Image 1 (cartoon, rainbow, N blue to C red):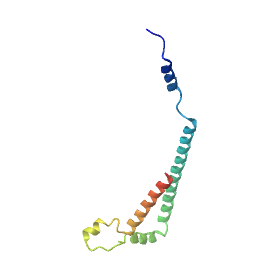
Image 2: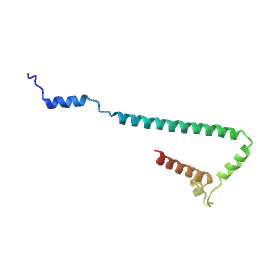
Image 3: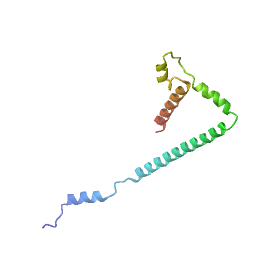
Image 4: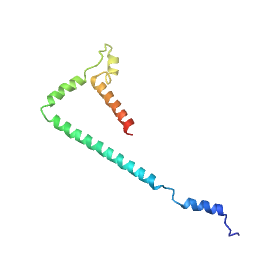
Length: 115
């Protein structure tokens, strides 16, 4: 057997043992993860605050006005004479459907801008 080693092969093994991670890259990834965690936490806290506010509003005398708002949200945008067609497009042929589509659009815009 031969105990002589190929110097090029030894060099390749030595390079493979060295750390490939760059400290600046690791710090940048950690910073972006911290920012994302903060944004997610802020979003969750905002949703929680909105739920608490909604609960307070629903328990106040404004409940009667919310009933009126609910009736308005169910109002169709376009009157339809065909019952089947009216039934099929009812989720989007109302003020609530329009508000929902606007909110979905804002959500997509927010995701494009933030992420």
